[in-house]
Length: 424
Image 1: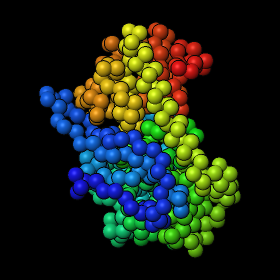
Image 2: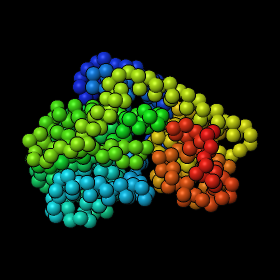
Image 3: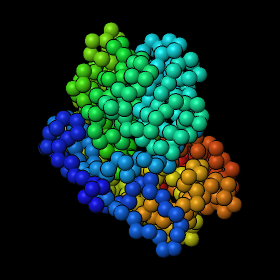
Image 4: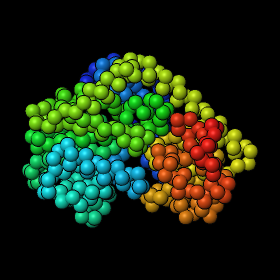
């Protein structure tokens, strides 16, 4: 076990060792560790999941790191094809053009590029692209789809190779992957080796402010090493000669930020949004212990509420299933202790998850088509970050009397009159 997981002693951003102990979820299997339904089931390794905050730079992180190659070399998460994400990807390209002044033929490099979906949006605008992702299975799909990509962890060595082969990048992008990276300094060394002197870096992460305010405890699992505020990213980027120039908030993954930076001496100007959001974070008290301790108390309360409500439905003879099997949904099931005894099945569109069992809780995963054959009375909406889109698409289920339980920020029930959702 010791060669798979390690306890961090110093902050990965600033190197300090003064920790605020926030919350312990106990030990759990990896949230993406889906199981084949064999008999007997294999023994699942469980790893501690303890949340801490650095009292120096205020990075929130998990205290134990599972080795990245264990989690990411063969990965089942595939970039969502929802309308929400498609629109967001288009906006990313627009923002990149506005901030980096992209012209046809410029190079865009993406770290954590998955199957290359985001890069295809850049290709359509006449840009050269290159993706770097450690998941070999996903890189094969990207290359088959015509998106030049390489299976590797993005860092100084792999980025220098990209620069040598393709030239410097006018735009470097990391969408929803930076939180998965333990050695952020090597990644930023990679950025500085591949980015053009007037290039722009964009890093998209779930926003710590939204996580705290909305009780998004299920965003915390082993793959997410870090939970970022803009002030922490500002300090990190500055240590690598990168200057923040803009911040955009986006309604994806429960609330995210896209932080734009450029080499310190770049002519790209800094926008007023940077100072405004840094001031907002100070006003919220993110540099004190209070919001993190409040989050811990809220987390304990909401976990109990979800568990008791679902078990109460089952005790009344109601059939409950899960809608979506994202990592956060699997984490929520584990934290709440909800298993196949309460949740009959989970439906998910990802083919690689169908026919398998959820990690730790051993609930069968089926396709949406199979789920429609035996619809439950209630769906626990595990993909709650797509709630509006899912509820709008599932009007037949709701019109037939079905209901959704949206668990975050606190459980509420949605019926056919979903705009009048009631607290659970």
